[in-house]
Image (cartoon, rainbow, N blue to C red; front, side, top):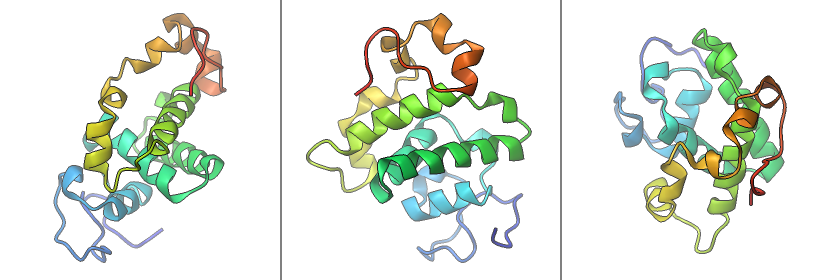
Length: 157
């Protein structure tokens, strides 16, 4: 792990973009955002649904599907543990969102940047989208939290 001050949000001091740090993840390059997340430099209050989708999109563009999923799972688990919220990690939700983002990222034409991707796939920013695939009770079960459960309403793409 880089020798960074974890109390400061923003791209690493040796940011690939060379831009000045800002506390708004949306303003960071994808590489800066990914690196800041992986090095645990982002405060938990700056990570919301949109940032999870962005990270899933970044991994989906850079890695084969299984490797992207592994990086996402490990990253979210490490982030949650670092911020004292390890129990918040939910495996089925993580995998389901990764599958939805992976499918959307592979749609033609591919988006050149996250802003374009987000505009073309606004449905991914509805946090209730998984209710289209899962009954609430199944998704909220302990089994779904700790292991992958297939959807019970309709298959994921």
